[in-house]
Image (cartoon, rainbow, N blue to C red; front, side):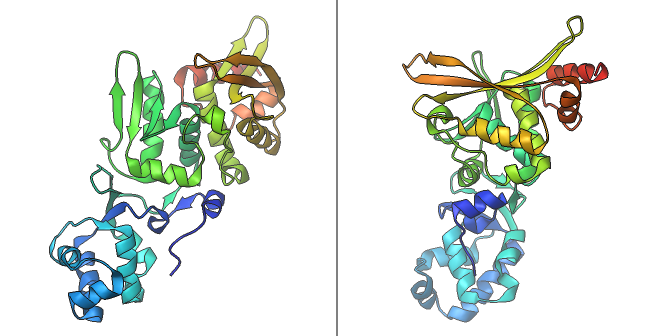
Length: 327
């Protein structure tokens, strides 16, 4: 059985199976399916002593797996068990269909997960763009935006990709910050697909390659980026119409990879653009950065872009609709 794939392969495909996840992750199986699994396991191993010898799983843990109804099973232990059984009924795909919960042992995790986690949708691309734009990954994964509609849109996209329910993702509203906090399992999945951990201006990550190979995902990335980072400028009296967004990067790099990838997206979609270096600056912590700006303008050009997007920000989307009416 194929239990693992390289990060490069995952980034190309945009699909994460349970067996791609770190061993620290646990799952809860459908109880009837789990009982059949453990009966078959003990039928093969005969005794818990032999089961321990074959898998390295402690006998007390094997007893818990047999006797407890909603037991959390560590992924590497589960893979060892199904490898010993080696029976079609308990292949990887069937196991995945019977996972009812997934997460770190002491975490909230995700109930009724949508395994495999497939990001090949507009929702998947928007979610990754949101984490790239206004999100950050450290001890956990977060998305910060003062607009409730923007947070709700990102939350909806995450639930579409991962499963779960309304309380799976925390929505924290404080005086100086309003943000979403995602379960650690979602962070672990995003880290398999991206290099977004830490300060992105200093890491200089790429957009995942599977996004760059699908036009639907490209539009998803752009509409979220414009919603988070962009400006829709429409002044009827001056006939000025444009969409702009900006990215910052550490001056130790000679180019900003995300900008380069977004230019690739625009080229693939047949969208003309202007690219401008709008200057260097120093952060409050003394970090030297440069900022790049992408600008999309002109009527027909804007139509090609805007007609295929819905910006997840009502103010910007309404302004975009009004702009299109005059094009």
